[in-house]
Image 1 (spheres, rainbow, N blue to C red):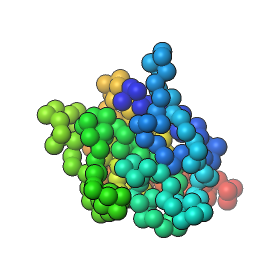
Image 2: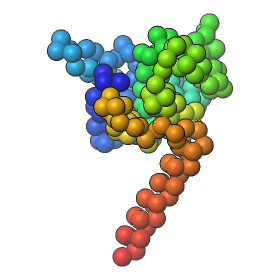
Image 3: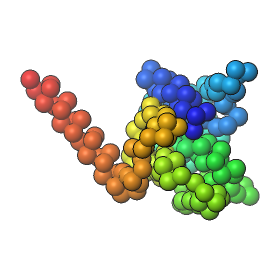
Length: 198
């Protein structure tokens, strides 16, 4: 968590200028000799909301770390929450020592991402803190709207966990988290409308 928090913050900066990395994975996280983790290879980065396929129709990203919307292999537009999902997969692998989705072929992997939920971290670890488990669950929510809205929110929760503080994801998994995110989004839209009407 301490290693990935600054990576998530760096990706959030890219998001702020309208870029989505689209290929977050362990091999694109480099460790500097002073111990800092750096995110590399923005070769697949595109504008926030661009289609999930390249001009040749090939899916963008590395299969094991793709979000469900990338795995649809269609013209579904992806946004910053795609990177949040891939960060969640990377965190899952770092904690469990294995990727959440495996398969004998590319299509098996993509089908698993589209249609299955990963095994809970507790199935791979004898002991796992519920706080970090909740962070992974929210980051890897199959529905983009149920995830952290951006990498900054994920970084904040990772930093809270490292400090020993409660994470926002704890106790807000699944439907509870989705309801929380929808209520927050609605409140933000309502405030913006009120402000504009003045």
